Length: 146
Length: 111
Image (cartoon, rainbow over all chains, first blue to last red; front, top):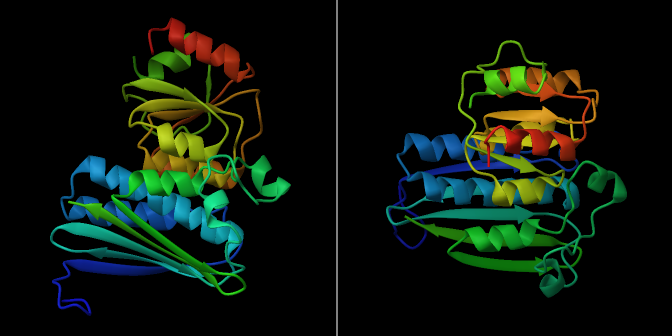
């Protein structure tokens, strides 16, 4: 298997997240974690990928109209691609600030929407890229070195 | 100190009878914000929270916590308990506040 740049891909897995599915969110992060464990990835790296996946999954469930999460494993790194269809992020700098959140009161009562998701993702990843178009959606790419 | 030992010492109610309570507790965490627990959690921790919904088990399982302790005697959803049994995460409950439970755990030597 190889990607569009001809790089060797060890494994890849794509999963769908539905809008509003935050009660069961965490399943994809758990599935990615199991995959990485089976492939023998070191546990500190698995931990960082699991945290970033969980936060991305919750964000898609809370804020987007649905999206995909793709885990791509290369010999030297793991890439996590998160793409959604949704309202987009108006101010990315604000969204990256700890404590800033646009989540509803209902969602906050459940312990989500603390404004920690995006900073958590960035902190966990070795490389973090985000692009967002208002009214269309958001794409995040994270790399984790192996 | 194991989960079974704190159940006895702190008079906790075990809501998931089919889970393994022989695990060692390596630390503690008191928080109701899932992202904070996600950021700061470590394997083996006992997590004290008032949250009782399904996602608590997802976070506990991702971090491989030794148990979840529900404070304030809150009612726990059936589906949360079913998921906890499936993931093997003991869910314990106490009528005491998170503050008091954290103090008890600390007093038992879990720092």
